[in-house]
Image (cartoon, rainbow, N blue to C red):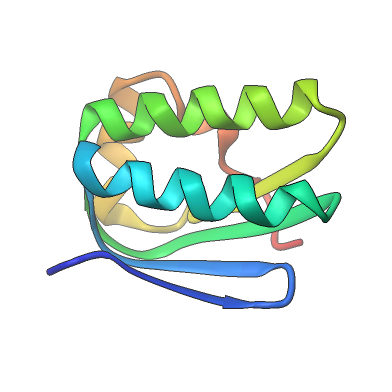
Length: 100
């Protein structure tokens, strides 16, 4: 399944497979939105597959946003389809523990 990004205000939902090619597109969407805003909620609940490299890129993006004194809340901790990769890549800590 191709990646689909839906956004309503400060909530961005990602659907489909997240790989290194479409991660660039997602990063561009997030960077563009955060230029004029302080907070974004990114939902990975509908991601069907995530590559190891994409999990690492999400982590780098998460850290970069925090260094710029902005908030990127990533939800999707309950998504069993990505949980093992997030744990294996040591990036599960970027997933929000509760709904924002």
